Length: 482
Image (tube, rainbow, N blue to C red; front, side):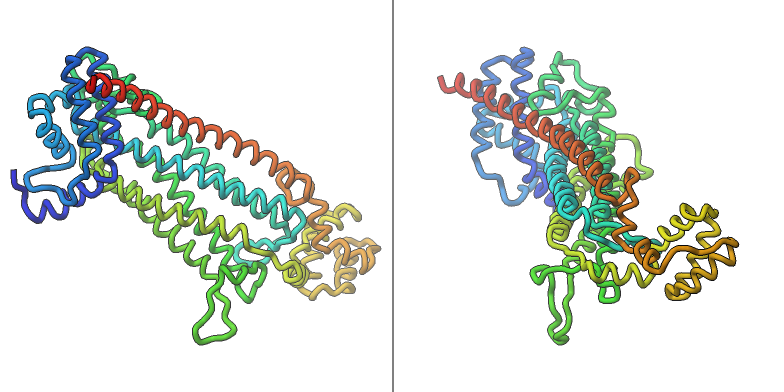
Protein backbone atom coordinates (compact mmCIF):
# COMPACT_ATOMS: atom_id res chain seq x y z
CA UNK A 1 0.00 0.00 0.00
CA UNK A 2 1.35 3.44 -0.90
CA UNK A 3 0.56 6.21 1.57
CA UNK A 4 0.15 9.92 0.90
CA UNK A 5 3.57 11.63 0.84
CA UNK A 6 2.41 14.20 3.37
CA UNK A 7 1.00 11.55 5.72
CA UNK A 8 4.12 9.41 5.38
CA UNK A 9 6.55 12.25 6.05
CA UNK A 10 4.70 13.81 8.97
CA UNK A 11 3.21 10.74 10.65
CA UNK A 12 4.75 7.46 9.55
CA UNK A 13 8.37 8.58 9.20
CA UNK A 14 8.26 10.33 12.57
CA UNK A 15 6.74 7.26 14.17
CA UNK A 16 9.41 5.06 12.58
CA UNK A 17 12.16 7.25 14.07
CA UNK A 18 10.51 6.90 17.47
CA UNK A 19 10.12 3.16 17.17
CA UNK A 20 13.78 2.68 16.26
CA UNK A 21 14.54 3.94 19.76
CA UNK A 22 12.14 1.31 21.13
CA UNK A 23 13.55 -1.56 19.07
CA UNK A 24 15.26 -3.29 21.99
CA UNK A 25 11.98 -3.40 23.94
CA UNK A 26 10.18 -4.75 20.88
CA UNK A 27 12.74 -7.52 20.43
CA UNK A 28 12.45 -8.49 24.09
CA UNK A 29 8.70 -8.69 23.66
CA UNK A 30 9.06 -10.91 20.57
CA UNK A 31 11.30 -13.30 22.47
CA UNK A 32 8.97 -13.48 25.47
CA UNK A 33 5.93 -14.01 23.28
CA UNK A 34 7.67 -16.74 21.27
CA UNK A 35 8.81 -18.60 24.39
CA UNK A 36 5.26 -18.44 25.71
CA UNK A 37 3.78 -19.78 22.45
CA UNK A 38 6.23 -22.69 22.62
CA UNK A 39 5.64 -23.51 26.28
CA UNK A 40 1.86 -23.35 25.89
CA UNK A 41 2.20 -25.64 22.84
CA UNK A 42 0.40 -23.13 20.66
CA UNK A 43 3.18 -23.39 18.07
CA UNK A 44 5.21 -26.50 17.16
CA UNK A 45 8.73 -26.54 18.57
CA UNK A 46 10.37 -26.64 15.13
CA UNK A 47 8.54 -23.48 14.06
CA UNK A 48 9.57 -21.77 17.31
CA UNK A 49 13.19 -22.70 16.71
CA UNK A 50 13.13 -21.33 13.18
CA UNK A 51 11.51 -18.09 14.33
CA UNK A 52 14.08 -17.80 17.14
CA UNK A 53 16.83 -18.20 14.55
CA UNK A 54 15.28 -15.49 12.43
CA UNK A 55 14.86 -13.11 15.37
CA UNK A 56 18.51 -13.54 16.30
CA UNK A 57 19.52 -12.72 12.74
CA UNK A 58 17.39 -9.60 12.30
CA UNK A 59 18.37 -8.35 15.76
CA UNK A 60 22.01 -8.29 14.66
CA UNK A 61 21.20 -6.53 11.38
CA UNK A 62 21.14 -2.76 11.12
CA UNK A 63 17.75 -1.14 10.74
CA UNK A 64 16.84 1.03 7.76
CA UNK A 65 17.49 4.73 8.06
CA UNK A 66 14.11 5.56 6.53
CA UNK A 67 10.82 3.68 6.58
CA UNK A 68 10.58 1.93 3.18
CA UNK A 69 7.65 2.75 0.94
CA UNK A 70 4.63 0.53 1.41
CA UNK A 71 5.25 -0.13 5.11
CA UNK A 72 3.08 1.30 7.84
CA UNK A 73 5.43 0.89 10.76
CA UNK A 74 8.36 -0.98 12.28
CA UNK A 75 6.23 -3.98 13.30
CA UNK A 76 5.26 -4.72 9.70
CA UNK A 77 8.82 -4.03 8.52
CA UNK A 78 10.30 -6.51 11.02
CA UNK A 79 7.70 -9.11 10.09
CA UNK A 80 8.71 -8.65 6.44
CA UNK A 81 12.39 -9.10 7.32
CA UNK A 82 11.50 -12.29 9.18
CA UNK A 83 9.47 -13.45 6.18
CA UNK A 84 12.46 -13.00 3.90
CA UNK A 85 14.45 -15.32 6.12
CA UNK A 86 11.79 -17.94 6.87
CA UNK A 87 8.97 -17.50 4.33
CA UNK A 88 5.89 -15.40 5.00
CA UNK A 89 3.91 -18.37 6.29
CA UNK A 90 6.43 -19.31 8.96
CA UNK A 91 7.15 -15.71 10.01
CA UNK A 92 3.43 -15.06 10.34
CA UNK A 93 3.17 -17.59 13.18
CA UNK A 94 4.90 -15.12 15.54
CA UNK A 95 1.87 -12.85 15.47
CA UNK A 96 -0.38 -15.60 16.79
CA UNK A 97 -2.52 -14.41 19.73
CA UNK A 98 -1.28 -10.84 19.69
CA UNK A 99 -2.08 -7.45 18.12
CA UNK A 100 -0.20 -4.26 17.47
CA UNK A 101 -2.45 -2.82 20.18
CA UNK A 102 -1.03 -4.93 23.01
CA UNK A 103 2.46 -4.77 21.48
CA UNK A 104 2.40 -0.97 21.47
CA UNK A 105 0.92 -0.67 24.96
CA UNK A 106 3.52 -3.05 26.37
CA UNK A 107 6.55 -1.50 24.70
CA UNK A 108 5.49 2.00 25.76
CA UNK A 109 5.12 0.93 29.38
CA UNK A 110 8.54 -0.74 29.33
CA UNK A 111 10.07 2.49 28.10
CA UNK A 112 8.30 4.70 30.64
CA UNK A 113 9.19 2.29 33.44
CA UNK A 114 12.92 2.44 32.67
CA UNK A 115 12.89 6.22 32.34
CA UNK A 116 11.08 6.66 35.64
CA UNK A 117 13.44 4.31 37.45
CA UNK A 118 16.34 6.44 36.23
CA UNK A 119 14.53 9.60 37.30
CA UNK A 120 13.87 8.13 40.74
CA UNK A 121 17.59 7.56 41.27
CA UNK A 122 18.29 11.13 40.16
CA UNK A 123 15.68 12.45 42.57
CA UNK A 124 17.20 10.48 45.42
CA UNK A 125 20.60 12.03 44.62
CA UNK A 126 19.10 15.52 44.77
CA UNK A 127 17.37 14.80 48.07
CA UNK A 128 20.59 13.36 49.47
CA UNK A 129 22.47 16.51 48.43
CA UNK A 130 19.94 18.70 50.23
CA UNK A 131 20.21 16.51 53.33
CA UNK A 132 24.00 16.56 53.32
CA UNK A 133 24.10 20.34 53.07
CA UNK A 134 21.57 20.48 55.91
CA UNK A 135 23.86 18.31 58.02
CA UNK A 136 26.72 20.68 57.25
CA UNK A 137 24.73 23.83 58.06
CA UNK A 138 22.60 23.26 61.19
CA UNK A 139 23.48 26.71 62.58
CA UNK A 140 23.90 28.70 59.35
CA UNK A 141 21.39 31.55 59.65
CA UNK A 142 18.98 32.39 56.86
CA UNK A 143 16.31 35.04 56.51
CA UNK A 144 12.95 33.72 55.35
CA UNK A 145 10.39 35.81 53.50
CA UNK A 146 6.60 35.80 53.32
CA UNK A 147 4.67 37.71 50.64
CA UNK A 148 7.99 38.93 49.26
CA UNK A 149 8.96 40.66 52.53
CA UNK A 150 11.46 39.71 55.27
CA UNK A 151 9.62 37.63 57.86
CA UNK A 152 11.64 35.53 60.31
CA UNK A 153 15.08 34.11 60.83
CA UNK A 154 15.67 30.43 60.28
CA UNK A 155 18.61 28.24 59.25
CA UNK A 156 19.86 27.07 55.90
CA UNK A 157 19.30 23.49 57.05
CA UNK A 158 15.67 24.18 57.98
CA UNK A 159 15.12 25.84 54.59
CA UNK A 160 16.70 23.03 52.55
CA UNK A 161 14.83 20.31 54.41
CA UNK A 162 11.52 21.94 53.52
CA UNK A 163 12.43 21.64 49.84
CA UNK A 164 13.76 18.11 50.32
CA UNK A 165 10.49 16.95 51.92
CA UNK A 166 8.58 18.33 48.93
CA UNK A 167 10.71 16.28 46.55
CA UNK A 168 10.35 13.21 48.77
CA UNK A 169 6.58 13.56 48.75
CA UNK A 170 6.45 13.68 44.95
CA UNK A 171 9.00 10.88 44.57
CA UNK A 172 6.97 8.62 46.85
CA UNK A 173 4.01 9.11 44.54
CA UNK A 174 6.13 8.61 41.41
CA UNK A 175 7.26 5.25 42.77
CA UNK A 176 3.62 4.44 43.56
CA UNK A 177 2.72 5.50 40.01
CA UNK A 178 5.24 2.97 38.75
CA UNK A 179 2.81 0.39 40.06
CA UNK A 180 0.28 1.67 37.52
CA UNK A 181 2.91 1.73 34.78
CA UNK A 182 4.52 -1.62 35.45
CA UNK A 183 1.64 -3.96 34.61
CA UNK A 184 1.66 -5.88 31.36
CA UNK A 185 -0.87 -5.42 28.52
CA UNK A 186 0.43 -8.36 26.47
CA UNK A 187 -2.19 -11.00 25.85
CA UNK A 188 -4.96 -8.44 25.64
CA UNK A 189 -4.86 -8.68 21.86
CA UNK A 190 -6.77 -5.96 20.07
CA UNK A 191 -9.05 -5.42 23.10
CA UNK A 192 -10.65 -8.74 24.16
CA UNK A 193 -7.70 -11.19 24.55
CA UNK A 194 -7.67 -14.30 22.34
CA UNK A 195 -9.14 -17.76 21.99
CA UNK A 196 -5.67 -19.33 22.19
CA UNK A 197 -4.66 -20.78 25.61
CA UNK A 198 -1.86 -18.25 26.21
CA UNK A 199 -0.08 -17.60 29.52
CA UNK A 200 -0.19 -13.84 30.09
CA UNK A 201 1.64 -14.08 33.41
CA UNK A 202 4.61 -15.82 31.83
CA UNK A 203 5.11 -13.00 29.31
CA UNK A 204 4.58 -10.42 32.06
CA UNK A 205 7.31 -11.99 34.19
CA UNK A 206 9.75 -12.29 31.29
CA UNK A 207 9.37 -8.57 30.63
CA UNK A 208 9.83 -7.51 34.26
CA UNK A 209 6.23 -6.48 34.94
CA UNK A 210 4.53 -7.01 38.27
CA UNK A 211 1.50 -8.73 36.71
CA UNK A 212 -0.74 -8.60 33.64
CA UNK A 213 -3.23 -5.74 33.36
CA UNK A 214 -6.36 -7.14 34.99
CA UNK A 215 -8.79 -6.12 32.22
CA UNK A 216 -7.92 -6.53 28.55
CA UNK A 217 -9.93 -3.53 27.36
CA UNK A 218 -8.35 -1.31 30.00
CA UNK A 219 -4.92 -2.60 28.98
CA UNK A 220 -5.38 -0.98 25.59
CA UNK A 221 -7.45 2.14 26.29
CA UNK A 222 -6.24 3.46 29.66
CA UNK A 223 -4.05 6.57 29.78
CA UNK A 224 -3.11 6.18 33.44
CA UNK A 225 0.26 4.66 32.54
CA UNK A 226 1.38 8.05 31.24
CA UNK A 227 -0.99 10.56 32.90
CA UNK A 228 -0.15 9.48 36.46
CA UNK A 229 3.60 10.09 36.14
CA UNK A 230 3.03 13.19 33.97
CA UNK A 231 0.89 14.85 36.63
CA UNK A 232 3.45 14.13 39.34
CA UNK A 233 6.37 15.33 37.26
CA UNK A 234 4.42 18.49 36.44
CA UNK A 235 3.96 19.13 40.17
CA UNK A 236 7.66 18.57 40.78
CA UNK A 237 8.61 21.01 38.00
CA UNK A 238 6.23 23.56 39.52
CA UNK A 239 8.04 23.09 42.84
CA UNK A 240 11.38 23.69 41.12
CA UNK A 241 10.16 26.91 39.51
CA UNK A 242 9.01 28.20 42.90
CA UNK A 243 12.28 27.21 44.55
CA UNK A 244 14.43 28.81 41.86
CA UNK A 245 12.43 32.05 42.07
CA UNK A 246 13.27 32.12 45.76
CA UNK A 247 16.95 31.59 45.00
CA UNK A 248 16.91 34.37 42.40
CA UNK A 249 15.32 36.82 44.83
CA UNK A 250 17.75 35.98 47.62
CA UNK A 251 20.71 36.24 45.21
CA UNK A 252 19.83 39.76 44.06
CA UNK A 253 22.07 42.65 45.04
CA UNK A 254 19.21 44.18 47.00
CA UNK A 255 18.93 41.08 49.20
CA UNK A 256 22.36 39.54 48.81
CA UNK A 257 21.83 36.49 51.01
CA UNK A 258 22.91 33.78 48.58
CA UNK A 259 26.29 33.80 46.86
CA UNK A 260 27.46 31.63 43.99
CA UNK A 261 31.04 30.70 43.07
CA UNK A 262 32.58 31.92 39.84
CA UNK A 263 32.09 28.58 38.07
CA UNK A 264 28.31 29.13 38.20
CA UNK A 265 28.44 32.79 37.20
CA UNK A 266 28.59 34.51 33.83
CA UNK A 267 29.78 38.10 33.32
CA UNK A 268 28.62 40.92 31.11
CA UNK A 269 30.51 41.60 27.90
CA UNK A 270 30.16 45.32 28.60
CA UNK A 271 29.62 45.89 32.33
CA UNK A 272 32.71 44.96 34.38
CA UNK A 273 30.83 44.80 37.67
CA UNK A 274 28.25 42.20 36.63
CA UNK A 275 28.09 38.73 38.16
CA UNK A 276 25.09 36.88 36.80
CA UNK A 277 24.20 33.53 38.43
CA UNK A 278 22.41 32.54 35.22
CA UNK A 279 22.41 28.86 36.16
CA UNK A 280 19.27 29.81 38.08
CA UNK A 281 17.59 31.09 34.93
CA UNK A 282 18.59 27.99 32.98
CA UNK A 283 17.07 25.86 35.73
CA UNK A 284 13.88 27.94 35.60
CA UNK A 285 13.69 27.64 31.80
CA UNK A 286 14.00 23.87 31.89
CA UNK A 287 11.56 23.40 34.73
CA UNK A 288 9.01 25.60 32.95
CA UNK A 289 9.43 23.87 29.59
CA UNK A 290 9.17 20.42 31.19
CA UNK A 291 6.08 21.58 33.09
CA UNK A 292 4.49 22.64 29.82
CA UNK A 293 5.21 19.31 28.16
CA UNK A 294 3.79 17.28 31.04
CA UNK A 295 0.76 19.53 31.13
CA UNK A 296 0.25 18.97 27.40
CA UNK A 297 0.56 15.19 27.83
CA UNK A 298 -2.24 15.28 30.38
CA UNK A 299 -4.45 17.63 28.37
CA UNK A 300 -4.14 15.66 25.12
CA UNK A 301 -6.42 12.99 26.62
CA UNK A 302 -9.15 15.40 27.70
CA UNK A 303 -12.46 14.66 25.96
CA UNK A 304 -11.02 11.79 23.91
CA UNK A 305 -12.94 8.50 23.51
CA UNK A 306 -12.32 5.71 25.98
CA UNK A 307 -11.06 3.54 23.14
CA UNK A 308 -7.90 2.53 21.35
CA UNK A 309 -6.78 5.95 20.08
CA UNK A 310 -3.53 7.41 18.74
CA UNK A 311 -3.21 9.72 21.74
CA UNK A 312 -1.95 6.53 23.41
CA UNK A 313 0.68 6.21 20.68
CA UNK A 314 4.36 6.92 20.23
CA UNK A 315 3.96 10.65 19.44
CA UNK A 316 2.65 11.47 22.93
CA UNK A 317 5.04 8.94 24.50
CA UNK A 318 8.05 10.71 23.03
CA UNK A 319 6.74 14.10 24.12
CA UNK A 320 6.67 12.64 27.62
CA UNK A 321 10.23 11.32 27.16
CA UNK A 322 11.32 14.75 25.92
CA UNK A 323 9.78 16.36 28.99
CA UNK A 324 11.46 13.83 31.24
CA UNK A 325 14.84 14.47 29.60
CA UNK A 326 14.48 18.21 30.23
CA UNK A 327 13.25 17.53 33.79
CA UNK A 328 16.39 15.47 34.42
CA UNK A 329 18.51 18.42 33.31
CA UNK A 330 16.60 20.62 35.75
CA UNK A 331 17.25 18.16 38.57
CA UNK A 332 20.97 18.01 37.75
CA UNK A 333 21.20 21.81 37.71
CA UNK A 334 19.36 21.98 41.04
CA UNK A 335 21.80 19.52 42.57
CA UNK A 336 24.75 21.59 41.34
CA UNK A 337 23.19 24.73 42.79
CA UNK A 338 22.55 23.14 46.19
CA UNK A 339 26.08 21.81 46.36
CA UNK A 340 27.71 25.17 45.69
CA UNK A 341 25.47 27.98 46.95
CA UNK A 342 26.69 29.80 50.07
CA UNK A 343 24.83 31.95 52.61
CA UNK A 344 26.23 35.38 53.57
CA UNK A 345 25.84 35.31 57.34
CA UNK A 346 26.80 38.94 57.81
CA UNK A 347 24.11 40.04 55.38
CA UNK A 348 21.50 37.78 57.00
CA UNK A 349 22.11 39.32 60.43
CA UNK A 350 22.13 42.83 59.01
CA UNK A 351 18.81 42.36 57.24
CA UNK A 352 17.26 40.47 60.13
CA UNK A 353 17.97 43.20 62.65
CA UNK A 354 17.15 46.03 60.26
CA UNK A 355 13.76 44.61 59.31
CA UNK A 356 12.77 43.30 62.73
CA UNK A 357 12.78 39.67 61.58
CA UNK A 358 13.20 38.47 65.16
CA UNK A 359 10.52 40.75 66.63
CA UNK A 360 8.11 37.87 67.18
CA UNK A 361 10.43 36.54 69.85
CA UNK A 362 10.39 39.88 71.69
CA UNK A 363 6.58 39.82 71.71
CA UNK A 364 6.68 36.25 73.02
CA UNK A 365 9.11 37.29 75.76
CA UNK A 366 6.82 40.10 76.88
CA UNK A 367 4.02 37.54 77.22
CA UNK A 368 6.23 35.17 79.23
CA UNK A 369 7.84 37.79 81.48
CA UNK A 370 4.96 40.17 82.13
CA UNK A 371 1.94 37.88 81.66
CA UNK A 372 0.24 40.19 79.17
CA UNK A 373 -1.76 38.95 76.18
CA UNK A 374 0.01 38.28 72.93
CA UNK A 375 -2.23 40.79 71.14
CA UNK A 376 -1.02 43.52 73.56
CA UNK A 377 2.59 42.41 73.10
CA UNK A 378 2.16 42.38 69.31
CA UNK A 379 0.95 46.02 69.30
CA UNK A 380 3.76 47.15 71.60
CA UNK A 381 6.52 45.48 69.57
CA UNK A 382 5.00 46.75 66.32
CA UNK A 383 5.41 50.33 67.56
CA UNK A 384 8.97 49.52 68.61
CA UNK A 385 9.90 48.22 65.15
CA UNK A 386 8.31 51.24 63.46
CA UNK A 387 10.40 53.51 65.69
CA UNK A 388 13.58 51.99 64.24
CA UNK A 389 14.14 49.94 67.41
CA UNK A 390 14.06 52.86 69.88
CA UNK A 391 14.32 51.45 73.40
CA UNK A 392 12.60 54.41 75.07
CA UNK A 393 9.59 54.10 72.79
CA UNK A 394 9.38 50.37 73.56
CA UNK A 395 9.37 51.01 77.32
CA UNK A 396 6.86 53.84 77.02
CA UNK A 397 4.53 51.84 74.76
CA UNK A 398 4.69 48.87 77.09
CA UNK A 399 3.91 50.83 80.26
CA UNK A 400 1.11 52.76 78.55
CA UNK A 401 -0.54 49.63 77.17
CA UNK A 402 -0.08 47.32 80.16
CA UNK A 403 0.00 49.64 83.17
CA UNK A 404 3.09 47.75 84.35
CA UNK A 405 6.67 48.84 84.84
CA UNK A 406 9.05 47.81 82.05
CA UNK A 407 12.07 46.07 83.63
CA UNK A 408 13.97 44.63 80.65
CA UNK A 409 17.24 46.42 79.90
CA UNK A 410 18.37 47.46 76.45
CA UNK A 411 21.07 44.79 76.60
CA UNK A 412 18.46 42.16 77.42
CA UNK A 413 16.34 43.35 74.49
CA UNK A 414 19.30 43.04 72.14
CA UNK A 415 19.93 39.50 73.38
CA UNK A 416 16.30 38.53 72.92
CA UNK A 417 16.33 39.94 69.39
CA UNK A 418 19.54 38.22 68.34
CA UNK A 419 19.08 35.77 65.45
CA UNK A 420 20.94 33.09 67.40
CA UNK A 421 18.51 33.36 70.32
CA UNK A 422 15.55 33.30 67.92
CA UNK A 423 16.72 29.93 66.59
CA UNK A 424 17.76 28.55 69.97
CA UNK A 425 14.30 28.74 71.53
CA UNK A 426 12.48 27.18 68.56
CA UNK A 427 12.81 23.59 69.72
CA UNK A 428 9.36 22.44 68.66
CA UNK A 429 9.04 19.59 66.15
CA UNK A 430 9.59 20.98 62.66
CA UNK A 431 11.41 24.08 63.88
CA UNK A 432 14.89 25.40 62.99
CA UNK A 433 16.69 24.66 66.24
CA UNK A 434 19.36 21.99 65.84
CA UNK A 435 17.53 19.21 67.67
CA UNK A 436 14.34 19.22 65.53
CA UNK A 437 16.49 19.70 62.44
CA UNK A 438 18.46 16.58 63.33
CA UNK A 439 15.18 14.74 63.86
CA UNK A 440 14.00 15.85 60.41
CA UNK A 441 17.26 14.69 58.87
CA UNK A 442 16.92 11.26 60.48
CA UNK A 443 13.34 10.99 59.29
CA UNK A 444 14.11 11.96 55.72
CA UNK A 445 17.09 9.59 55.63
CA UNK A 446 14.82 6.74 56.70
CA UNK A 447 12.42 7.62 53.89
CA UNK A 448 15.28 7.84 51.37
CA UNK A 449 16.41 4.37 52.41
CA UNK A 450 12.93 3.00 51.74
CA UNK A 451 12.63 4.80 48.41
CA UNK A 452 16.07 3.65 47.32
CA UNK A 453 15.24 0.06 48.26
CA UNK A 454 11.94 0.16 46.35
CA UNK A 455 13.64 1.62 43.30
CA UNK A 456 16.47 -0.87 43.45
CA UNK A 457 14.03 -3.76 43.87
CA UNK A 458 12.13 -2.69 40.78
CA UNK A 459 15.32 -2.20 38.80
CA UNK A 460 16.61 -5.62 39.87
CA UNK A 461 13.31 -7.21 38.91
CA UNK A 462 13.58 -5.78 35.41
CA UNK A 463 17.24 -6.78 35.05
CA UNK A 464 16.70 -10.30 36.43
CA UNK A 465 13.71 -10.82 34.15
CA UNK A 466 15.73 -9.66 31.17
CA UNK A 467 18.56 -12.06 32.00
CA UNK A 468 16.13 -14.93 32.44
CA UNK A 469 14.50 -14.07 29.12
CA UNK A 470 17.83 -14.01 27.31
CA UNK A 471 18.97 -17.25 28.95
CA UNK A 472 15.79 -19.08 27.99
CA UNK A 473 15.83 -17.65 24.51
CA UNK A 474 19.48 -18.65 24.11
CA UNK A 475 18.55 -22.25 24.93
CA UNK A 476 16.06 -22.13 22.09
CA UNK A 477 18.89 -20.86 19.91
CA UNK A 478 21.18 -23.70 21.03
CA UNK A 479 18.58 -26.20 19.89
CA UNK A 480 18.42 -24.42 16.57
CA UNK A 481 22.16 -24.85 15.99
CA UNK A 482 22.41 -28.47 17.17
